[in-house]
Length: 281
Image (cartoon, rainbow, N blue to C red; front, side, top):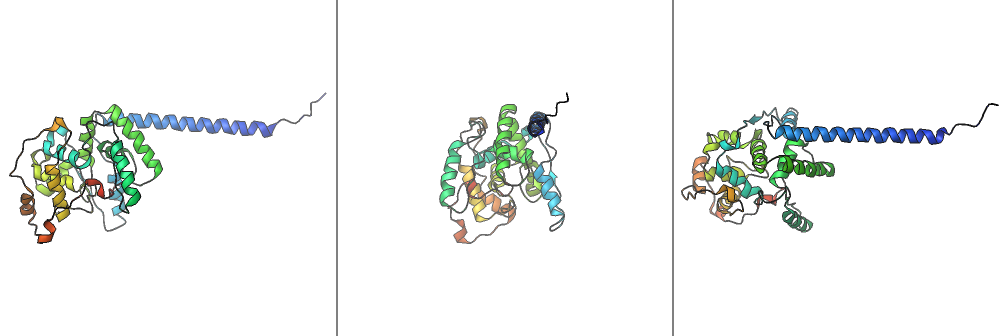
């Protein structure tokens, strides 16, 4: 006798689709993990040729006010002056050598500040900035923030602190189309990064975290106050002790760029480096 009982297609098809969906999600997740970890391992040894921010801004310029090229030159950290290394640590992340990628105290302070102030304050470490500059797209979203945390954890575990700082110093944006301290040093001071003085290094670091709004070659009174603070600010980093050179002052910067200020601009009511939200975040 022929069994005319209908097959339970209504139950089978959803289960089949669910298995296929789970398999697809698993495959994509595994592929992402392999690709992301491989990229981090490769960049542990290989110079970063370009970052998403570089290509995005250069491409976007074609549709705005004309194409802006990419000025960059990779140099090993041994060819970057110690004052330059110390300046960015003082300006952006004084606890760089003692945290594991995140400064939770700074994050807590920023959250409290942002609840009561219109101008948002950031708390990204050098490790976080390096992760997002090298591996992520230049747009704000919760997804990108989550990816930033993921890549920060990866580079903190797979790179040394020296390597993180080296990559940061070579890819950080320091002007329109200018990336890395070597390119900035040559453009603004006509010298290699290994020959930067304390005053010059502090001036470069003072435009962070908004190197488009603030100008290295046209420093405002605010930037000169930040330069002065960076030169005088203490640091927890014992590895980067420097000789004191009192002859290198803010006055040298004024003379180099032929800057004139009104008397009221010379007051010092400066703030920390995270008082403005980074332009490339």
